[in-house]
Length: 428
Image (cartoon, rainbow, N blue to C red; front, side):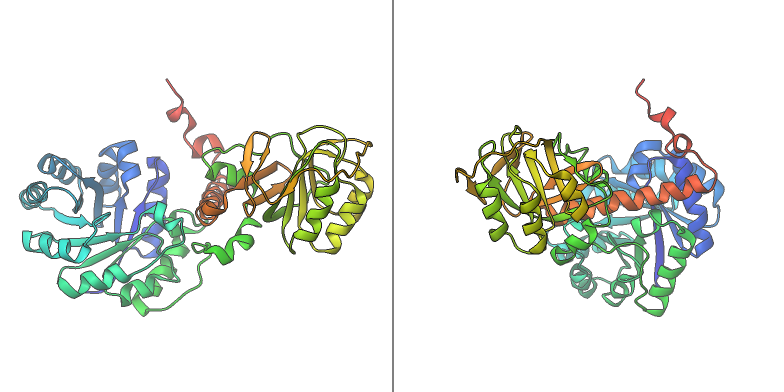
């Protein structure tokens, strides 16, 4: 069986899905998938429109059936689906009902082994039942942790003869690896739906799987911990806020210099208003690339100034974030040292030595721990917990790439309101 490229239309707007489907077919995709978000948003009308618009292409309805198998397969098949998916963790009788209904209406069944613990065992069981395909799925939430592995494909391939599909984080760089692992159906979503040029993206992935080549992707691969700083330098705090489900910034902290961005791990300082001893001592503790984050209670006097900035810059510290006062801003701007602060004041305090370094602190009502990641730009400052850094860096890049796709659609003559179909989504 030659490798098959299936493009998953994981949109919530049918208009955008149809446009991308057309670009994907022009690029050479073999199958189109009405993704679960599209079916949930638009209903089976999306299958009908895909069938009407593309009568000669195989259409997969990613229903992820868990119950009432017969009626769901029947309705999907009548709408025009050639293949319908059922979850491998569904009851055996549900899967059998799906198989019977598919036979009755001329469709096929793909069992998605999402969240099945022993994939090889379950794959063999459903093969015996009479399904047509087995699918392995790396969930989006898992992809965001940077884990992309085809080991499960190899395990399943050893025990069944059915065609195996793989989805989740596939792009032109790793698609050939998926084929070499034993997958015959390569399901691609974000690498196409987030691409500014879907036709080109499909063409390159198709070339990768047919010739078993590794082709550089225009989109970012899922990052690991070593890539975090590079990727965070490319996304904005607005992207990160969206990735954090509209997560709030460290409120009231504004940049002293516009057009400068900071990215780094936090060296935390808790001090008392005007006591600049511990903030200055933190310069000696911080490593190159770190960001000093100071909790001074959000009030005057200043705990940071030009000399501290000069010292920090000499040590190649990435910047300072002060929940409190800063002074000497004219000199700080001249030297170009990135600083964010709650307020500006000419008044300095005294170095009394109260407080601590590298302990949990409270900034604008948010808990910051040593080693948390700090990102600041003209929109403000955001903190990401260190244990979530890989996941939310991936999510932020995902937001940026989706925006890039929308931007391209606007460039092609749309408006933001039309592209996002705002009227449809307004609360009634």
